[in-house]
Image 1 (tube, rainbow, N blue to C red):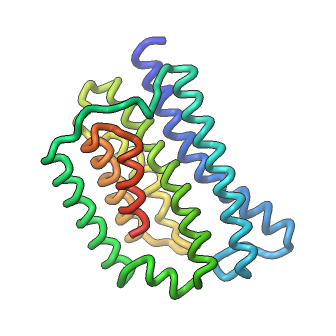
Image 2 (tube, helix red, strand yellow; image 1 turned 60 degrees about the vertical axis):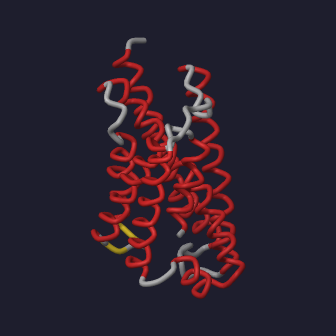
Image 3 (cartoon, rainbow, N blue to C red; image 1 turned 180 degrees about the vertical axis):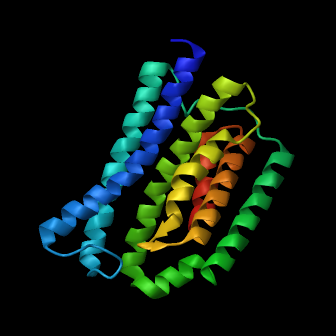
Length: 220
């Protein structure tokens, strides 16, 4: 397999991570059919919790399959130890985190976790944030595999290609937010995706550190 072909394989893994997120729609439709009513944000708490649990199990399965296949078939271990992260890199990561927090605060009109806790109550809040924790895994894999593909094609690893792929997939799909056409949310999510991709590069593609930072940027 030459470099061009292998790049396409990695890009396909990135798209499969995005498609894995889309399996939530299948779960919603199936669950709605079984209980005889549409599952959504105004559904009874137990319906939402079941939806989140099934979605998280599915997403974890997809993430494992993608990581396993990347290592088994292409020899790419996303967890390989990376280079030492320099001080200036941490400073830029911190700046991006602050910018992300301020954008989120402005977009939500307040501190997101507090607002969601007040709106949902403690039980739903806990399960929703478990859902966010798992969602972040697939969002990161979109970035990881997208970056790997374009690194192979362009030989310019300092550009956040993975963030761009994430912006054009996971970010852009937020144009439909809770069933409503919302271009501002799509732009916000796409910009945040680019920031996620930049963080991944700044921590020298250390997937464990990148996950922690991106998760905090995502939930806060």
